[in-house]
Figure 1 (cartoon, one colour):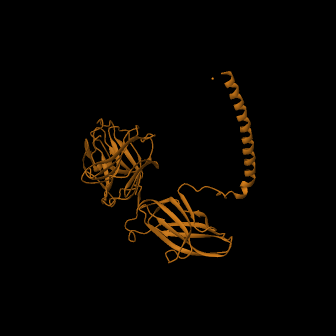
Figure 2 (cartoon, rainbow, N blue to C red):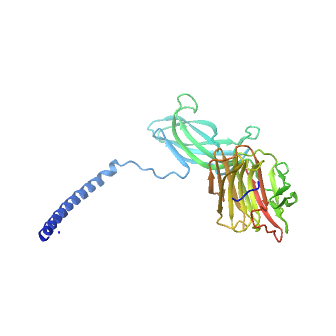
Figure 3 (cartoon, helix red, strand yellow):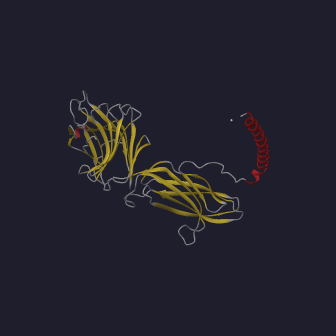
Length: 378
């Protein structure tokens, strides 16, 4: 966890005559082009292709395999969901084939790893010109049904089929895909109390000081990590088990003004430099932040940037999404950096700490300062 910084007169007359002749020819060509344009304008509306009434929104993809059978509209879930919640979606379908049609409507929900959760298809029979609404619902599996529920953005794919989906001869008639309309999480901790079944308070030396369990408390429904006056000590929490790998990890933090210290939110498993995904922020108004990964005994990726706000003035969300072959770092929902290689592949502890590294100025705080954690979700 401890990091290192890292021509004559006759000729003129001939030219003038040539220029006049050229001008006359140009006027004739211009008249012919104008006439052609006018005729084309009269004929164009009768042969121009029909334009779509509106463009698709960002993250949408529409495919219509059989003209006349169409998904007109959708109502998809938004926000955050957890195990045991029911995710509901609805689409409006229409038959404009010129005849009565029977088909099936299906819906799949795709997790961040690309795994599909297929919902039961619904049989539909529509007369020509008729439309109907089709609803779908998905109960997010309990831990006993699905051990590795992956947190993060989920994709919704709705489709119309000629036959029951999955049966022989079934053909896709229309498809509408929507990227990340909602997010799923395993847990959010609001720290009304300190949950000893989920978290442990660390006790070990780090940087210039020691991480003390007594510096980690809860107050006003928030977790507080105190940096005591006159010392280099700090505090740290880690998940009770090293069972965190792929998923979305987020924390809402307000940092103290102690520029010799940093706050870290990260995944880690010993030994150092083997397995780690790291966000580190200087505890001060400067807004310096690092995104770093460790694998195979070395710093595999690192990026330093500055936030466009004072992180000590208010709470802000810090986030990283780790999936196979990629990790994305966000602040307040804005993607700031991505890495596509050099990533750990073993489960780790989820951790958060505040401490004094030996590569900063090393000034002790004159009075006690506190990192406040509103929530952590994963």
